[in-house]
Image (cartoon, rainbow, N blue to C red; front, side, top):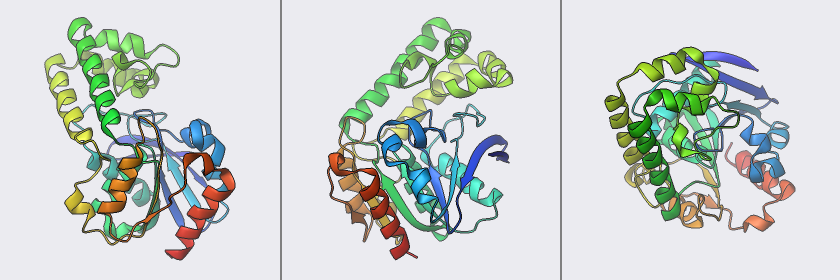
Length: 283
């Protein structure tokens, strides 16, 4: 457990195991932290950190603006998350690593692969987010936050965010910076004092950039089609992780491997064995 400053943002990370480096872009939405690998849904069942760390140096970190990592209000695009992930490798003096994404972390992983192909030994995309319902629900969540800000102001957002258990995915009113608002008093003070009209413009641009398609977001298809990075795709099948999103990535990433196994069969033993098989074959 440690912290490092990446582009001015204090970043929390944990390193597990030994072997080739595996950068792990956490599952979850705007609350994607290391703990999600241990506690969220299917991740608590397949236990990637426990199993993959037997063969690889797993580098897990709280994504910027989430968990114990600091935040900064600015118009974010997927590539900004990729830059933050690359900064994690740079801080550890790692030139090249496998990159694994879970859920929304898959969008970060593909953005990383496009931005830094020379630093990407291979990609594992587990349950990539996407699909029409994902986009619609995401836009609705941002709209609810914008409406709350418009009607109540930013100080009201700070007050809500300080309530235990508050999260953007559960209560859209708190917005995407809820983690930093809850854990960093100085950030919360700056947040409340910023120009509310400028903030609303930032939010409007973010949702259009991050949730811009009914497939899996993260990178343009033309950029994915130019990749030559070994890739394993494991599909989900629900409102946030449409199977069509995983198939889209298979279509766009040349030579990618699609593990055509239903969610009900993605148990701890078989899933970790398939991921390790892929990683070893990509060495």
